[in-house]
Image 1 (cartoon, one colour):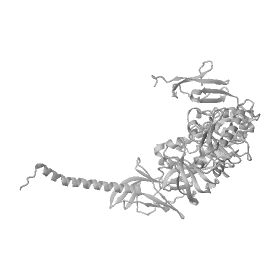
Image 2 (tube, rainbow, N blue to C red):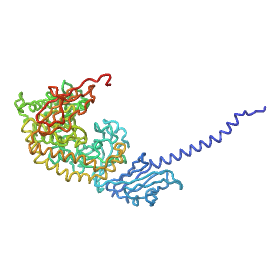
Image 3 (cartoon, one colour):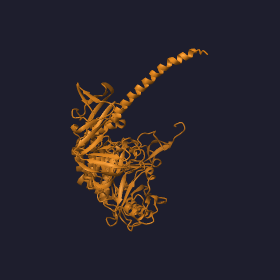
Length: 634
């Protein structure tokens, strides 16, 4: 039988070699991509100092097609060696100079802060072209953290997840400070949690005195991600430490590497907690755990104004210590223990003990209730107990806490991250103000009344804020304590901040700040020059100090405007020197919408619209006028 080929069969035969060529090209392209991927992913550097060796993976910016090698302050380029796969050598070219490096060679012939045109070469062929820059920190210690899993993926997505690992801490000169296991690292933060540069809590396997801040297991790594000057928290924490405020967190700038990659410049801080080197009082949470097994499984107990847990056994002494945080509703609901004060309606989270028994909650909430009644009373005396507000509070710590918040116009000062503590009665029967915490939105970082320099706000500038410090300022002993503390310490310290401290901080960390901005360019983009960013703070402090000198040193008379807007949970007091006008007011822009209502302006009880451009010669109360959002406005 004779088989006759159809015309289409020849076409198929012709396609076979074409398909073979196409497959070969695709395979060759895949091989090239694999080589290029190997070049990028395998590039690493070994940094050696004495007996210590650390591997650093460079940061690759796709936007710039640039490798950035961020080195710790102690790194000598003659002791930094390069390693890679997928190529025989790498060439580095800059301004007519060319250097060839093979695996294991040192970086000593390359200069810092220079951009090199880089090529990965294999079999005399260029496999990948990129750019390369080497930068080095200066004067800062370095913390290396290695997680057990080798990744931070879960830590960076779940704040409740705790990842074990190990750490190495080197000082600025490369001497080993500590090396040990980490019980865990976990994510932390509220408004900052949305950023890829996270803040973290770490718990060491064993207590350690890190950089002279006292021995402890728990530490905080603050990202300062919302403060591109990196100064606001540091200025304030050091101010509180210098003022002698108990429990004020000491802090140090560090460079942080996690799983061999540079994670940026951080502020290593003490944690707010009971302890010998923290707040010196009984750890009531620890006492609860000793008496009650699996305390985290305890049944929740709720009342109309409080929440805690049922504990089978209470410590003999439940008078302290307590760490209390005044917070906003959204955060309060996420916590295990807390209460709402009966008079002012402030929400307080019991941070320690975290699992507070019903009896402990009743004790501390009752004490706060008695304190509020005394503070709000015109004569400063609780009518039910007959005790003065001075019986309930440590006057100096409350005055210092208020001054620090008022000085820097901290956006959240009276609303969130506002701490108090109560030791056991054997130490003190009083409630203390502090420690200080969270100032990345202070010193003019936020617009409006948070940036106005010539007024007092009494910590009332936020919605859902407290009026506690407004009422305290009506008590003569408190006002006198504020003026006295300002005269004896804070006035001169602010001058020191302007003349010395800020420059000192900048000189410590400017190299790391440059590295951090590049590492997190996805957050910062191209920021303004660093000096201009810092000038916002220096200008704010200069103008603020001039005003506070008039009020707290020269006793200038002030007039107060009380802004009332219950539909927005706003109860704001603002005072300016008599004869001056307010430079900013709450909800300044008419027509803005919030909570389903449109703001129309501020009006007196008689219906007269408040004009902020008019000088103040008397106290006045104004009310927000608003209307519901209509279908047409939607």
